[in-house]
Length: 214
Image (cartoon, rainbow, N blue to C red; front, side):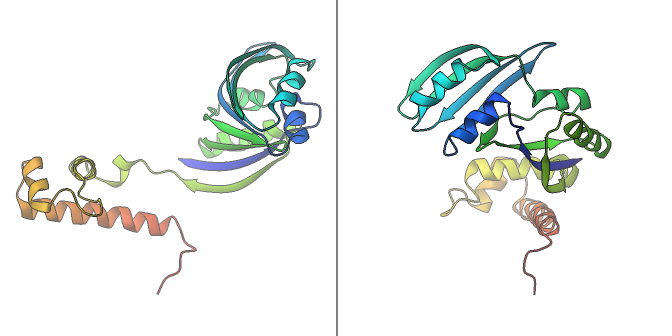
């Protein structure tokens, strides 16, 4: 299924875009978000040296009906807010594309990772245009689940090898020890790992066509 990396430019007049543009070195990390019919609720972590200026600005914004500072320490604050203009949530709500969290907002731009079918991604783009949200598609690639690439046995052995430290430097587990832990012959263990490693490496190279080759 396609996975896309997008950069959204938050329109002027949307409070979180305006605040982040006014404080371009600040980072807003959206941890949770929920939109209703007339309002949206969010949980965000703000990192900035300008918190003394940022928090009052958010609290006095006409579009923010409620603000609670749940935690504040040094240059970080965890806030929960309610807004009457959850503009960024409306396109995903209408297109049926699930919003992946967390995502970050900085200097008026939001960076999103979305996974959806090609028709739904196209519909999401149409919704962005409908709501006047400029966006850039930075990258689109096919997301492949491990179970599609490896057999169950290969995946289980790789997970066991990683957990046992077989791929650590220096190794914390030998091939003989790994085979004993897996309850299989050493030769079977070696062959299974080789096939699994080959599949993973080939897929990695295929996913990076610009990588230098011989």
